[in-house]
Length: 258
Image (cartoon, rainbow, N blue to C red):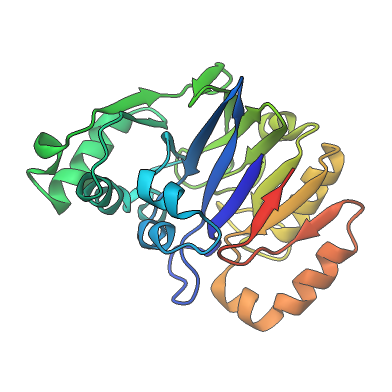
């Protein structure tokens, strides 16, 4: 399993692209890829990401996961689709997310480019995920659970042949999220605040506790409030260094391999 941090920032970070991950792994004997979230600035970051191969940037992912319908998690879809159309994509793109996915995706694409969906040379297949109901994404077994965010948001467990990822989207981890994180190779969790108590968001402390109690191998903390990352980034890194597992604050383009 190879996880590339396309973006690691929160919604309005002017320096870091919105949080987005590109996951490559083996599903049976085939290599498959998934892009996790695609916000305002994430699509542009994807096509310029130094951690991705030229072929991955050219071909795009097999599937896209949208954790929830806030702009920093799915407003990059029109850019992604238009760019892949220009690059000659013909194979289907599978879009996974919560209830109302097809309607929300259609609305944002049509607002950006009213004729784009009709002109696509590839099929856009929208598949709704339900909490606790197993699903298959790009050939990978997956499950979702509701997080503690201000809008309905789904955390995701994604199982590749050689590694298991938990991606929490936005929000504090719920008991169901902690179950999904159990035994994962990598947990990627929002740490918008330092300590618990930020309404609708998770914290660095909760991210560490969740990953440690889940017996995960490693933790990446993303979506840190921009002022905190700039002013207290070193303190956050020291906190993560003191965890009982490998824990880190990734940069855009950084790669985790299992």
